[in-house]
Image 1 (cartoon, helix red, strand yellow):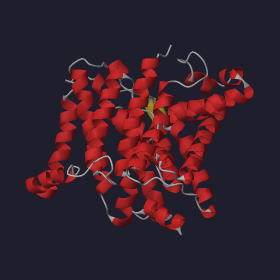
Image 2: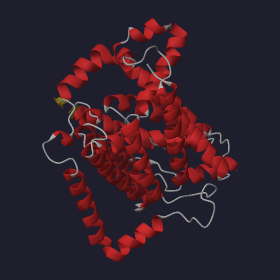
Image 3: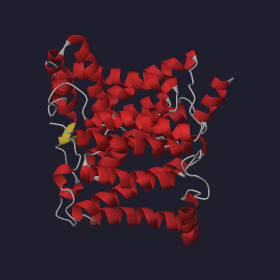
Length: 372
């Protein structure tokens, strides 16, 4: 049974995530897309900082007993993770945004991403109705290599692998840029606090990534692992329930499983968190005077719908979206999540390098086009 405290906590986390994502224009698809297109690694550095912060965060809370390995997010691993990640990477590049990016851009008034979100939910539901028996028996089982497994389940000290991985990351950075370049990067990532940070248009993506990693670690201890597409699937189930009744949901093997821990087919704290990500981005954009309703051009609609549908289907195949796998998956040293992330990166690379190149200032280009 859910309590009001859980919903309040979910709302707070959602507001923080939405605010931070909007402040940095933090979109995971751009981390690969921008590097392939124009060799810009700005957002990619942010993603690496986020991974490193989550790794150390999860390692610390497990070491000090604030959480247990039972709370770590793991799913069965196999080639299904790789294929799901690949298709998700293709879908989010076509749509112009990752799952979390679509949420904060929706809060900024981009109707294009409202359509992407609706299409993602439709894709989630489409998968649910082919899951049993087709996907379960003819997709997952043949590709399965092992049950959900985290490297934290080894007999090694919890902090050993996170420190080793982050240490290797730091070694590569310092070898590339030197100690001076490394510390200049740290100082350069800090927000200019001489102005009001709440009204600033932009915070450095590395600083935001660090704050998001800390927030996610606190959420892991106090609430749950962060997830976006799972709650969105349940939101779609709620809509179907309102139209066809609860039995329609419970008779579907996949949706029944999604609501297994819910007292009824209805909104839970995780769904509230996703909704408040949009609210947090809306508040942030209002404070920085960047909120504006922006209608998409008709020629972009196929990309929004097609990319969103593919993202929705792929997020159930992987399973999980970019934010769940990059934060909760990497932080929890989940084997499945590493496979998903590889697949996503390859998917973004394929579309960007061989189909069309997405410019680094894509979203600002949207602004200019729609203001014209």
